[in-house]
Image (cartoon, rainbow, N blue to C red; front, side, top):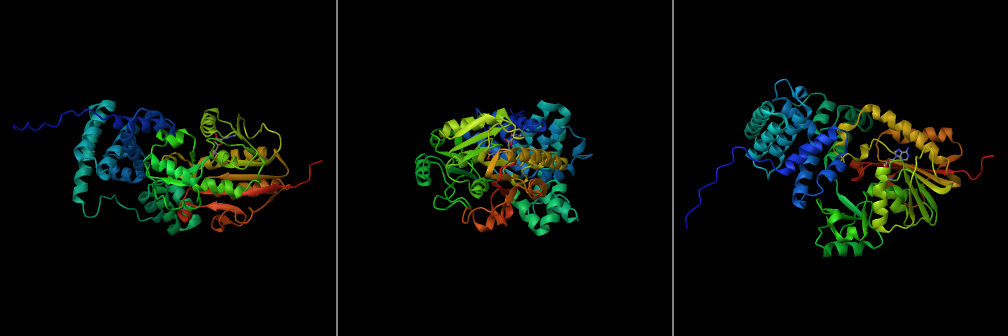
Length: 460
Ligand SMILES: C[S@@+](CC[C@H](N)C(=O)[O-])C[C@H]1O[C@@H](n2cnc3c(N)ncnc32)[C@H](O)[C@@H]1O
């Protein structure tokens, strides 16, 4: 049989849709969008395999952004700062493919980035991308034994910030609090891939595991309990949840064990009326509804409330009543228990949201703390005498956690801290009467919570 002649590599390769989408998602981030939302919006029509590939490219590139920038800066005359932000993002994507994506041949990583740069910015940008990425490729081959690395600074904070691609100001704060060794562990935990953990709803854990296994869904380790949330189930990474029958039938919702711990720590009495005043996307409201008589789930954001409504409908969670309201001026009469799962900087969830570390500014801490103070004050007004107020965040920062609760208690003598009942949560996540979950110590997202009891006396 005659051989067909080898096909020449196309001189101007067409750009794959996933790479165009990657650049578009990063442009969305620069415009203020959150990674999760931009990704969901842009990838709705994509095949599962392409979605997984794009997810890895974006999430892992952002987890290494500082490191990649250092490598690029050493090879761009005048440094990265002089480039258009979109060109910088294209270089980051190209360098990540080149250095970390074993499935992408070097010619594709370079050629596709060059084409993308030409299409978005013209010939000059494409020449620059070609020169910089080719140099990285050459240097990578020369450094094959040791791995390609930028110059490491002498200052230990600078070095940690570079090695783990985190903003320096955050590393400096954490080093002061936790010390260098523990901070390095926290940074490494933030750089790890976040597992997908789901909570059975309306079915037992075993029934859910059987349904998922029947649909051919890989479980991370079917025989093993999820740390800190034994009745949850960890799915293999890359599972597209919304495509699962068990998802459509409302048999589970997604929740990191740290969030499950917050609700267990709250230990709201069975049959209570509960207000969850910062509810979206609704995971804790669903968890609370297992034992509450009613959960009044409110949020100030109507767009985020749509996700709560979709979850409540999908799971047939009849005890959750959704309403739009600002927690600073709550819309319900006094109830038995109020959960304030406050808006925060989210520094405990960096492994899940690798874009967050690049978005956060030191000034956000004061902005968040002021909002939290107002929300906590408003929420306190709807706790009935003798009722419970639970304040929680997914932040690791003292201004948003202990300092916030201490200031509230100083202003509100009618509230007293109260530990959860024995056995509500493992002792290892308690710090006195407060809940303190740290990514590097507990292997899950970070979380903080405080339980405060309102005195029985009605104000005159
Ligand atoms: C940490 S998230 C809540 C997560 C949610 N409890 C869960 O478990 O799924 C904080 C929420 O507070 C909401 N929020 C921010 N400011 C608010 C305010 N003034 N009143 C009510 N909700 C507010 C945000 O829209 C956001 O949905």
